[in-house]
Image (cartoon, rainbow over all chains, first blue to last red; front, side):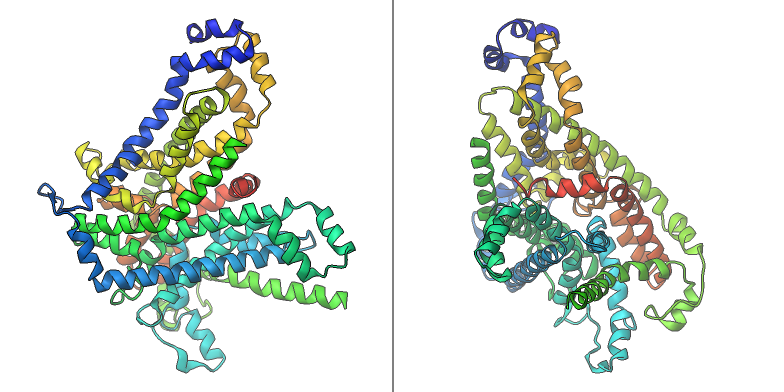
Length: 306
Length: 273
């Protein structure tokens, strides 16, 4: 160990840093983790693109079919439905969790009595797995469950339906628990961002006669630019990845009414065993996420440079 | 007027908190009800019975014990190995002028941002090829590989901001690279490691998708997929399913309560820069 750096420890700092690149130990520090990620992430990702150009049942070797899978996707009604549902998911789940999380952060940002408890209450579901969340809500949606009991209590029996088994409501009945879990998470991100804003800015705005709405619009929101970018990336990536909650509540059914691209991809791959076709769906998910991933990386790159 | 506003604030927030905590409490209460009680009055009714036998059923008949052991066998090594490897990479990339370090770092981060769907089929096939399929090793490996990029990125940001003088002083005292890493940098990075440790524990423990991709046998399943299986096994025994749900939630809640401060600061790590 000392052999690798014995030459470096006597030279001045600046020189040490430059010559350190030769140390095999340091090279291993970088290469071992990089190799692990290469084997389990980079190489599989490249293979994923290749598989999307093949027909493959997983037993016999894959046969190259060019862009056939993508052509088939274009005419696949289930795929189109899943795409629409994914967009609905992105807008409702993403949009409402940002609005809800931001709203709760604004309401709970000031330290006062009880705030700690309220924050903790909203945050509690974040530590549960989505499968646990799903089961908690299944009780809620169950025939004669809490939802039905509540509706009966207020005299709205006619609204009662099998929430998760009705194609009209299934997707929304799945979004609700996902939101319930996400709002606390987004709230924590915004709380951290709000805390970092210099109070002097608000003080100055107040001196200039800005009301609370103007201060929110012209001080708070611009100051949160960094947080907004992170939250946006997290939300879009999370939305496109969403799988667990749908899989545990409806498996994409009934009649694909709550199908997302992620669940359709999974069932196509591991239940229908159409691995090539499923890979093509995965590539579509990747392309949808690409813009966000690139934006995130550009931001990270700028930060590194500064 | 002020009093009125405070009152409105607390009333609104208590109702909202109830909306968040209510369903959880409902499940906890339901896990202590008898089958007959729920069958007769429905899951939406108030409890009229008390039993803890549901936990025994979920624990032994439902295989939750086995599943919890599997979860711990996967989660603990995955957290330790991925944080260890990420700390190594972050140390080298942040404290030394390694050629192409910025590209390496962003490439590693990019790997973590990929939608896992693109990796599922190749990873399943690769683990079949290496004979790891349907073993906990495959799950540990993929959890480590997939998480590494993000942990490295966060730890890199943290280590980069540590003062350079400490490292220089250690170098002058004759400490080697390995010693600087283990004796100087790791102790200084502890807050970030604790935050990431608490976070990654819940992420890996709560995972469903990777587990059902690389595992098949029920006996090998961690607690999250096992909970789904439990639901199939005890179709209408809502009390047993509720007990299983509570059992599956306890470890992450415990980690959260123990590392609360770290946990929240970990979530915020990426948000404020």
